[in-house]
Image 1: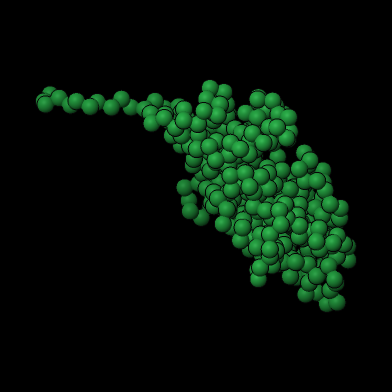
Image 2: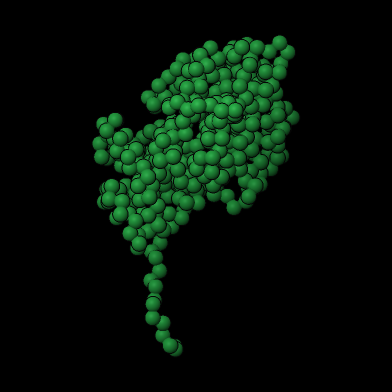
Amino acid sequence: MSKNILPKEALEKRSYKKDEDIRGCYYRDQTAIIHSRPFRRLKHKTQVFFSPDDDHVCTRIEHVLHVATISATICRGLNSKDNSEWSLNEDLAYSIGLGHDLGHTPFGHAGESELSFLLGGKDLFIHEINSYRVVEKLTNQGEGLNLTYAVKDGIIFHNGESFEKSIKPDQTIKNLDTITDRKHLPTTYEGCIVRFSDKIAYLGRDIEDAIIAGFFSKEDIPDIIKNKIGTSNGEIINHLVLDVIDNSTDDEISFSDECYELMLKLKDFNYKYIYDHPRLKEYKIYCKRIIETLFDYLTKLFCQYHWEIDWYLKENNLNIDIFFGNYLKGMKNFYINEKQQNNLTEGDLCKQIVTDYISGMTDKFAIDCMKEISIPRPIEFIQRPYSL
């Protein structure tokens, strides 16, 4: 029997009814996510290192695959314990892991913080909430992916920045459309496991990339971390996963005291030597400037052309104008309906449209658009002289 006390019908409910098939509802959610365009774009979105040239540096798509597999492994481990009463659903955990970062911005958390700043303050753009918006509203020209409630709940409440020692779900159905902050807990145990797996996935992987980038060497990692949980991504993941499996109790997902303290030490080390490294700080300034430039340009463009789609698509316009116009063409009905339903002002609608569009960009696309806006087109000389 599942420890999730909510009715199966509530957890498996979709926004609009759809007949299930041989895959089962949560495996079907996996395939819906994998086939979506936002998922495809993750391969060119930053995890930590911006727009990397090295093919082996972690991007957002590798990260979500790590989170998905770690989450499913923890579920399997808890289910297989002697006299286990867990009955966790691996497909549900895997689906949440795949979808949890679909709403992340280009340039990782630097892009997220800059969009939030441009909207007027801290936490006005939250990637967890935007990931829910992507799967529920934006994908498929405003139709969404029609995922189950349990998967959407796990996505919006995965909170990748929290570091709890233990967690148990808040087993109540919530109106996910009204969520505006990170204060809530997942509704399912699988969602709680994904929340832990997010941290497990990136702590070790970021170390590997930072060593390749020359930020530090393995010898710089504190001895207590090296001796207890290792230095490679595989060693760290293995140690933390087994610790969660061994120490989760009948009603909560938990690390041991020792492992939790080691994880906090590892997090502090990563912040000091990776996330706050001067070279990354320089890139963050550059990336924020790109986001700001795009936000300003697209805001002015929408104020100028509004819903006159043909104006965006004129032959001599910049590519970004044309791409943005085609986006608006496909999403026009969605945004007009959203404006009416939420009583949005024209200014608020414009901010929402521009935010949605920029947050969906890859690093490369954002950089290309920035170059196009900033660098004038060369003058083309049609008639060439016969001789010098």
